Structure formats: structure tokens, C-alpha cells
Length: 535
Image: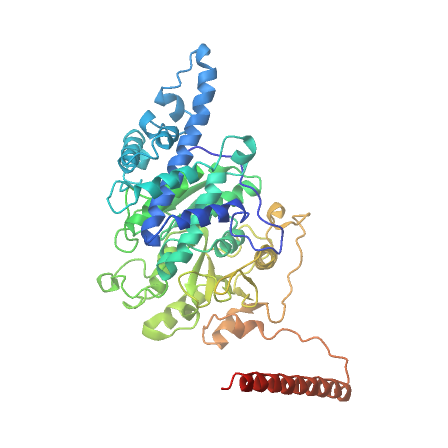
């Protein structure tokens, strides 16, 4: 649908970046969250995000409407839906336009007016059928706060060129998705993958052109970042074709809204569906697979799929879907396709219920291109550390270096910066280091992506103790097909300490004596204060 110009660049290298400048977005979130009152975050999410979406399509419509009004003398009709469809802008009926809702925001019937607006928009825009939330009239939703929320969202302006270039509503939508994921905790992980993790996957796979598949797409973050990548590196937003699937119906609707808001054409099917039991893209062979499947899912119905044709490397256990997902991804890869996905760390070493044998068969098939160990506390849904898998059907395709029979291991567990007491985020510098190492190792010729001036002479890769290591198939066999990067990269080199032992011991002893003395003084003061209180 309607495309805005490229989103604003993130923060400078080395700074954390959640997709917004954390200025007005954070202020807006604080105000919106205050209006939540006692409503559960999972429920409130659809109230807020639905209104943001409504504001977006109305603003886009009104902008083009004003243009047609000025051109009406030349025959343009501002009230002709075909005028808007011709330029991929959603047609918005009069009763659904934001200005109409704002004018009625203080009316007791505002909830019904919003529901009617959503129904009207779906009625004239088939791609949105069954997508938009339509439960604003329910008695439990405070209509006074709903009116205040409309007024708040009205402060998000798209009326000037600068704001359009920053895709302001898209940024707000993405920021709010992350905040709702945080508020929901474990349940939030079902629809949102932290942006820095998605960026690592996208920067490493570099999906410039072709078919991108995410068979467990959540709210569509993988696709949004892929499109941003293409735009940021001079490509055209339509150069990739987006295919996805999501089993959760409410999350599927979030994804459809997110992609429509971004102007990303997509095929997520006509409704939600389970990728294992109702594959909506059974014949698709994707150039890129990007995914963050549910971790260690024990309720995936594997007992009904014992003879499935996707299990090329072994039948996955019925109580854990990890290797079912991995083989589903491989099944959908084109002959030169590559896949990047998130899994729990246990997937790299587990030998339970045949998982070790499946992993062995994949290694022997030379599919495993790169393994990345990430730090903990990156996800809202779990504090456990996770890993990234990168699989390649053809380790020679598009590369200057033949990496057949080799796998790159990257240990990034020490990277990242804490954004609060419980959450960590990979910085721009961290992402550049991980992705740059991978592309240098591959010998990728696409210099525009990697910052390589001479694409025919990329930098030479070198192992870095404690961070990255090239391993051969024999190396991996020697480790029993365990793919944990720490097994391969070794310990980081320790800088030489030129201080003599005697001098260091004297200095440390003096410091310890000072600390003992300070401790004694504090103890005396505390005892004196306690005595004065007659305790």
C-alpha cells in the first residue's frame, strides 16, 4: 500500500537503538499507558494500535485528498475511490476519517463510531477484511479515556514533509509494539522479537532481492527490517516479495496492520494458520527464511506428523518442536537459499529424542554456515540466552570464498548494553561487528552493504580468540556435533600485565588495609547510632 520515504536512520554507532529516537515516542507511550487504568496490556494493545493504524490510513488519505482537490479543475474527483487505489492508498469513507472521529471524541457513542469506522474501511478495502479491531463499543472500555486517547494520538502529525520522511506513525507503532511486549512479559514474546535481534539476522542475511519467508511471523518485524535494509542500501522496496504465516489470530491481525501501515505488500494468507499442520505456502522455495519460532514448544502436534516429507534429516521429537522448525525452514529454501533464525541454546547441543542425530545429519550435509551465541536478557519473554543459526544450501553462491566443509562460530555473549534492570540490547557497533565478521568470512562481493570500497578485494578474515573461529567438519565431528560457539572460539587473549608481582602484591595489600579501616569506621558509627536509639 502507501509508501513513505525511508525511515530516519538510527542512533549513532555504539548507541542502543530500539527503532525510535526515544523522545516523543517515550512521552507518548507514558501518556497512553496512563490511560490504560486497570485494563490488561494484552487487551489494551489492540485498542491503541488499532487507533494508530486508523490515524495512519486517514492521514495518508487526507494528504492525497487535498492534492486531488487542487487538481479538481483538471477533472480529478477527490471522492472517487479509484483515484486512491490507483496510487496504492487506502480509500477511507467519510464516517471513518480521523477528523470525523476527533470531532466526536467526547461523545458517549465514540466506541460505536470507531467500530463502524473499522467496518467501513474493511468493506471498501478487501486486503484489510477481518484484520482491524472492532470492539471499541464494549461497556468495559471507558469511553472518556477512549476520547482522551484519540486526542493524544491526534498529536502525532504527518502534515509536513519532515514527519513523512521519518514515517512517524510507523515509528510510534513499532515502539508501542516493543513496549506492549515488555508489559506483557512472557506472553509478549509471542508477537514481538526485539529489534536488535532482528537487525542482526537481517544484516547478516542481507535480503536484497527475492522471496522472504517467515512461517511464524508474529507482528511482522522480520519483514519490516528487511524492507528497511533494502531501502537503506539503495534498493527498491518492492525488490523483495514477502511471504508469512502466523497461527495466533490476534497476532496475525497485528502483522497485517503493521505491514499495511508500512506499505509492504505481503502474502500472509487470508487468515491465521499453523505452519506445521496447514502450510499456506506448500510449494514456496524462498531465497531467505527469517524466523523466531516459539522456543522448545512441546504442544506442536508432532504425534500427527510422524511421516511428514519435511523430516529429511530425522523425525523430530513430539515434545519439542525446535528441529521440526529447523527442517521446515530447510524444506522451504531455494537451491541457493539461506536461512537465519533464533533458537534456544539447547538446540546446539541436545541429544535427547534423536535431536543429536538430526543435527549430525545437517552438519554432514554441510548446511550449517554460521552459529552465533547471543547474550541473555535480550527477550521480553525469557531471560535465557539464545543463539542464531544460519543455514546455506550452497556455500559458494554469491561469495568470493568457497566455504564448503567449513562453519563460522561467533561468540557474542559479552556484547550488548543494559537498557534497564532486566533487558539488554545489542548496539549498532555490536551488530556491525557480528554481521561484518560473517560477511568478511564469506568473502561477500557486495561492497555497498559491508562498507568495502573495493568489492573485488574484501578484507581478509582472521580468527579472533574468544570471539570467532572457522571450524572444519572434522572439528565439529571431534566435538560430537555440538554447535556451541564457546567450544570452538576459545578464550580471549589476555593482555600482558607488566607490573611486577611484588609491586602488585604490595599495592593490593595496601588497598585492602584501607578498605578494612574504612569498614571499621563505618561499623563504629553504626553501633553508636544504634545505642543512641536505645535499641
